Length: 249
Image (tube, rainbow, N blue to C red; front, side, top):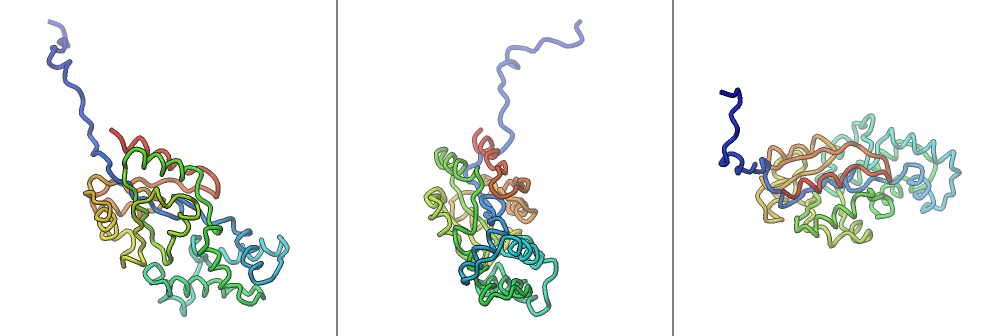
């Protein structure tokens, strides 16, 4: 008798079934997933120009380095939060005034000698021109829409990013925006992911959260699947398109 019996016809006819759940909706982080803040020196040059100051690029680079250490909206996080800003910093993603106060306060710790510079730096982040969508963003959102997959942008943020998507021609590809300062919850709190799923009309078990930080992976506690992408520099692909095979069985 052979060591391994030949499979019967009934065994041959059994087809494997997918082990993962169908994805009906994708929840997407904003910063670091769909878009990145502009290159630091360009940020400084643009802000200075609105204050009527034409900086040379050497000075702009030096200021940018110091401001990044202090911390800017969109990253990186500050090396140190001054005690007088601690409360605003803790609430920055829950209230517009706290977000503005925290980041203008951090910028003001860098003496640039330019009147209104801290406010100008913050205002730059509020504009679509202050951000650069990743190369994968538009084609991935378009492919998800074509496949009938619903999309929500879920972000810990203290200002409205809808105008950014409108300016980039992407607003019609997003079904819902779930912003921490509007819903009163921040990632990784499961409640923000539940809110997103509710707005899209899908069960969490059929939603995939895609981001770039451990906070985004908090969606698992809400019952969603989660994928954390690697960090990518401004203008470089970040692998967002890799989610497309996950949305179809």
